[in-house]
Length: 225
Image (cartoon, rainbow, N blue to C red; front, side, top):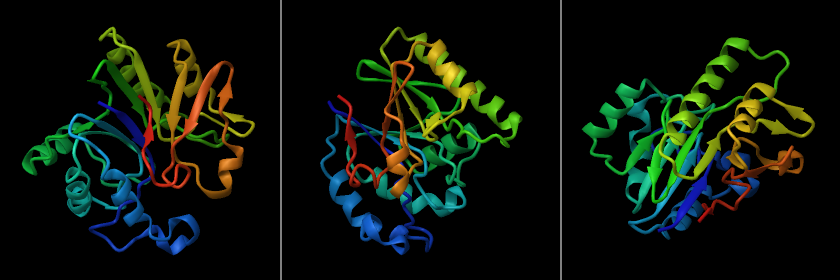
């Protein structure tokens, strides 16, 4: 069994919004992802840390779900800021069941146990001194709920976010304080692209951060264990 993570795949099988328009590393990104995901084995687990699909609805994202489901192994999804298809847990689970996507799980106020680990997380939030405090409070609540569910299993916890709670000299203290309070040592996150890599923080107050945006890791899932 291997546990991988990748963020920001930005698939667009069901809509015309390919990332190739940005050029550079994104040129031919879909083929790069398909080739790298082909290494997955049935016993493996892949965490997709947000911005999975450009689909504006579950219906429009259907082709992207079919694509990711065509690869072996289990997949665990978290929300990104561009996952406009995201919906209530009941609607997403109904969508997965109706389309027989039985290898896909959604983290949304919960956690999942996979091969000796408990996977927890949420979208999180980026530092912004003008950010809506209600949005931050909601994200803090979701992260707290997920971490408590993970802790109840007694298993080692792996935490994934979409937004980095620490970036450059900026800190979203509300999110970071939750991570620190639960004694989390490593956080995997996406969201940052291109020249922004240079400002990504690898460690802050004893907590390690790993940037796993697809273009940062050469469109190849990062092996955790």
